[in-house]
Structures are given as structure tokens and as C-alpha cells.
Image (cartoon, rainbow, N blue to C red):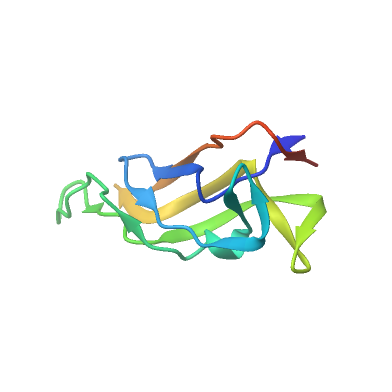
Length: 114
């Protein structure tokens, strides 16, 4: 069981950039809209501390979420699974071609799903 991610959850790249998420108002947890993967994947990242450099090593600042996975198998909103705190993913930035991994802080304890 994992905690359901909401608009109150913190999703960041490894260099502290914040993902701007879009929640689903049909399901709220502690007053915050629940997230699905489509409200995380390909979304904008702001505040990444990486600075572009032509290298070596080549450094690319995170601008968007490149990929994200980690959905519930049972709990859905509007027909699609909610995102869980087991989320894994990477931002569009990298250092020496190693992608920036995402980290998650769920920030709610009221709802868990599998």
C-alpha cells in the first residue's frame, strides 16, 4: 500500500526543481486534489539548480518530467489510476547523460491504496 499523491505532495528532481502537478478535483484528500500519472508525466519542472554546460561533463537543466510510473491497481479517479508515493521517474535534465531522478514526499496520511 502506498500513500495517494495529491496537489499537496512534493515531487522534485534531484537538483531540487519542483514539478508543477495537475490534480483531479473529483477525489480530494485532506482538501487537496488527487494526482494521476497524467498530472505528473511531461509536466513542467521549475527551480532546478542544474545549470546548462557543454562539458565535459555535459549538464542539462530539468525543464519537464521525462517519465513517471507508480500507479494504484485498484483506486481510480475518472477511470484512471491514482499516483502513489511509490512513484519513480526522471526529469529531462542530466549530468553526463545520467538522468535526474524524481523524489516524492506524499504530505498526507489519510488515504493509501494498492
